[in-house]
Length: 420
Image 1 (tube, rainbow, N blue to C red):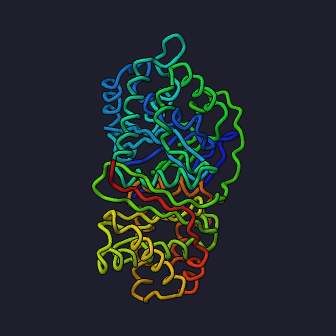
Image 2 (image 1 turned 90 degrees about the vertical axis):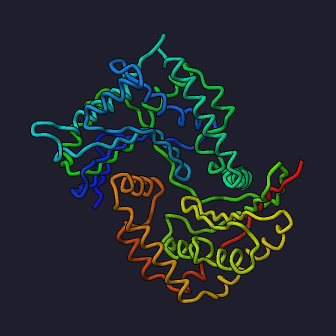
Image 3 (image 1 turned 60 degrees about the vertical axis):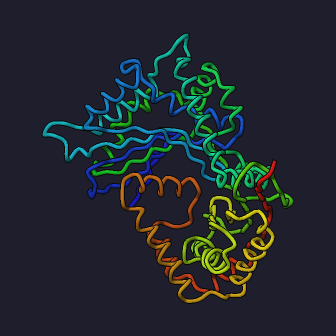
C-alpha cells in the first residue's frame, strides 16, 4: 500500500513499505511543465550532476563511493508524463537489513544523493565546462540514435505534427539544436531556478519506517531555499485539424503510422476498457492487427498499437512494403470497425484481460518497477489504485470495449517511404 505525505511545502514523499527485496529504491524528481525551451536542459541535468561532487570530483571516485555503499547505483531519471516533464535521480541500494552488523546504507545513500544534487564542482560559479560539453555530446548521440530507428522516427514525426499545439509533441529529451545551445552558465542558472521553484517528488521503496526516511532526507530539504510553484492539472489532448503526410527518405522498408484520438484518459473510469480495446486491436500477438493484417494477409512485417493514457492518444505503427500503404491503411481501419461492431471473440477478450492483469501483477516485481508505476500514476492522475485497477479490468464487458472503440477517431497519418 502506498502512503503519500507532504513533508514540506511543495515536497511530496510517496512511501511503500516492502520487505520482499534485498534492495531498496529512492527517487528524487523535480516536476516541470513540459516546455520546449527547457526540455533539453532538464534532460541534460541529471547526467551532469552524476559526473561528480567536490569530494568525488570524477566518475572513478563516484563509483568508488557507491562501491563503499555495498555496490549502490544512481541513474538519471527523465520522464514525460502527459503535460509534465520530470528530471532527477534514482538510487538503488542494499536494504539496511542485509548490511553488516552496525552498518547502515539508507542514511549514507541519501547523504551522497544530497552531495550529487547540491555540491557539484564549479568553475566561476557554474558547472564545469568539460562535464557539460561531454554530456551534451552523449545526449545528442542518444537523440540521433532514436532518429536512426525509423520506427521511433515515424512515431515522433507523427506526434510532433498531431500535437503541434500540445506539449505532448515536445520530445522527452528535447531537440538537438536546443541541446547544442546549452552553456554551463545557462544550465547552472536553470538548475538553481528549478531547485527553488519546482514541485518535488520523492519516492521510497524498502523496509525502513517512514519516519526514518523523512529523517534521512531532511538535510537535503533543509539545504534548499524553496518557493515552489503550483502545477496545472493534467489536460486531455485537444487535437488540431488532421493531416495526411508522406515523407521520402533512403529507407528499405516503409513505415505507416496512424494517430487516433479518444476522450478516455488515465483520469477516466473507462480506462480499463480502453486498455482492453488497445490490447484487442494491436497490443500483442493475439491482437486483431497482428493476427489478421500481418499473419493472415501478410501486409506488413510488423504491426502494433500503443495507447497513451495521459493524453488520450492511440498510435498504430506498421512496417510495410512501399506499395502496400493504401491497402494496409484500409485494413487497419477495418479491424477498428470490427471492434466498433462488437466483432470480438471471447478468446480475444480473455487474452487481452490476462495480458493486462499480468502487466499489473509485474508492477510488484522490483523496487524500480514499483517506483515507476506509482510515481507515474500519481503525476498522470490515474483514477485507480493498482488493486482497484485489477478489479476493474476483471469487470470489463464487451459492451464497455465497444463503447470505447466507437469513441476512437482518426486524426493524422504519416507514411515514410523510400526514394531520393
